[in-house]
Image (tube, rainbow over all chains, first blue to last red; front, side, top):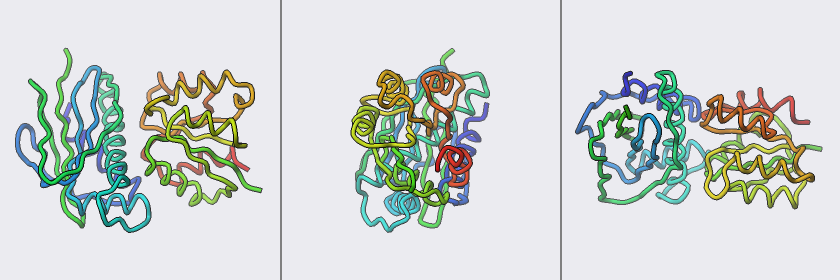
Length: 153
Length: 124
């Protein structure tokens, strides 16, 4: 199982299908590092055979561009629509990961996404969790999709 | 005369996207109603005439499966067709939805063409 590649496939599928957008894929980070400056983070919990948290970290310009693409209108502030849109990105990426993990006989359940907005915040880790993260680039900047996870034995 | 459709999703963004996809699919609508969860959807079905429901599964307050179960117990709405539109595509949960009356499912992410292919035959 290659979680980094699963994240890439899950994320690029969401963007190409929902937004008609081809992302530039960065290097997979296995472990610490690779952080992207972000102003909004959408998080979603996973349970079952793999437990952990999927997070999508975006700078404001990227988050507003994604939301604008979803809604077909200009978006100029990090409002509820943006929080909702980035939450849906996390939800759909996690849904694709759920299907990928099922292919490895790993069954997971998904929680409902939550989004936070701020200038300076840090999302804490899970004790004993592994981490895989992938930066993606679009015209407005980079964003990061990160999975902190524990495979239950 | 067009169709009356109810979109049930806790994401207002997703409700807008689905509504836009329906219009882009070339299907005519008189009304597109919205609900943020199963409870709101039941209230909407009690007061409006709806030809088709598109419902997410993972929602707060009342999820899509509980909504189907409750709807099946109400004679005035039990025959309104429901399509699930969700990231949940496992045979177990979709099978449960179909056993409770759902007539099909659309996986998120989706394109307007995918929506049209699935829903077209069910709409006027």
